[in-house]
Length: 342
Image (cartoon, rainbow, N blue to C red):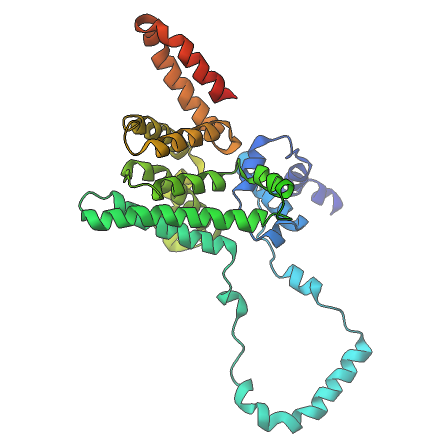
């Protein structure tokens, strides 16, 4: 029997999954940052090990079988153990007191207590609800047959919804600053300034606060909402027949394809250049804010890969024309590049 267990392929795969060096794999950091679970569960070792096995199954060995996570283990472990003598004495006392209280409790004992877990909304469910709402409203804003007044309202509502969900995610992950002094605020700000949630909140607030209505700017919002909805559906409805029949292929494509990230980065850069044409109008402030935001996206780890790729493609296309037709622009362009890469 022992030799048979040692040759069990799943046991060997689980040992390999445990021994895998996750810290040196950049995909693990990105995978873990996109897992939406309550903070009290993120600190548990069994939860971390479960998602490490899911990561190993997805990227390293698809044949690894990952067992579902037992959510009742902590509640059972947290209950204090009662000695047999105390439990027996308590049961006898309950038996003696039961006939006495049967009249007063007969009306309430018939109805079972409500299930508190069904009424509790965790962070993941709240984020899914908000992003699903944003997805519907953003599609309504972009759809060409919708009346202009309704479309403009939907445009601002989708931006405000994304801003609220991003700020809520920042608060639930990073909390408040430890103290309301300059040093604590600086430490807290440095930890959140390069996150996706912070950058998208600034992105949305920038366009909400302006009088400009750029439906083009909703494409990154749509991509973000699609990613969150697809991940939630894959994580929670993978056994549903309706999901497998109609939604599984689309959700797998959204979750595993980088097309949405590339498209979002190109749209964000395109919005920045689109605002250049309104540089001498009343929208000069939003132009400056937009390019400061693009610079932040260029250096932030969550956006850097897509934005650096898009900018390098733009540079390879534009540089030959500048060298051939406008070489006098090399000096100002190099000055702008020094500011950009700083």
